[in-house]
Image 1 (cartoon, rainbow, N blue to C red):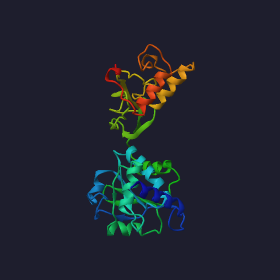
Image 2 (cartoon, helix red, strand yellow):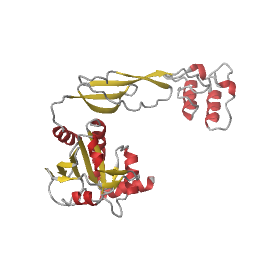
Image 3 (tube, helix red, strand yellow):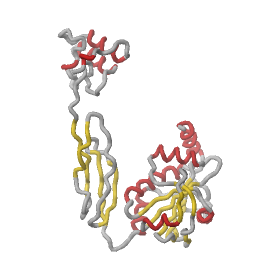
Length: 307
């Protein structure tokens, strides 16, 4: 599977980005898709009732060999999480000898794409045949009406975001709730929430030596933009003899640190209390050698070396 994905990505970079020579265009194509009947790439049935669950559904027509399409998958995923209470996203796969369901599923898994992708039925095939171009994006209302279309490539996510916001324009006021990893500071999710609404927090990342405690910040009854952080409790992990860098295991790196200490090198992140691996009362090259042998699994650390 990994080889297949690598091959697809190479082909995507070598081939022209898109099919067709027409300029990028944004227009309203009047069609109704309420009669669609198809299946996702994993076999789930989808029909016109799918559109009724959201004010807006974004249909993204793509091929796995197009670099533009692969880039836009990330834009669509970002929109899927940011507008999940107002808009849905549905991938439309262009299928040929190279752009297959297997290839699409592999790429979506690799990129972390969470929204479904479907095969084209007769109605969807007619929809995308209106322009000889890939990618194409269609915006559908809750009744299945195509209210807007974009033929070509979004230069960045902000262009797509602005288009969605314009199509969702109403008297409602929306705010952005951003969820962050409290340890790394990394952004986990952004979600737009109507005034007084509630955001859905993502799954908290797992960190070795820490236990997730709570979400710190307001995401209920939202009345302004909010930042919410995943907070963790540091676990009381017992130290291991030889694990001088404190990463929870005895490795070649620990042996090097002990050897450097034996040479008189000053070390900042060095746990002296577990450096005397042979427990002879001294920290020297004998400890470094024993640590190396344990790391290489040439000898087994005695049970009593674990505090």
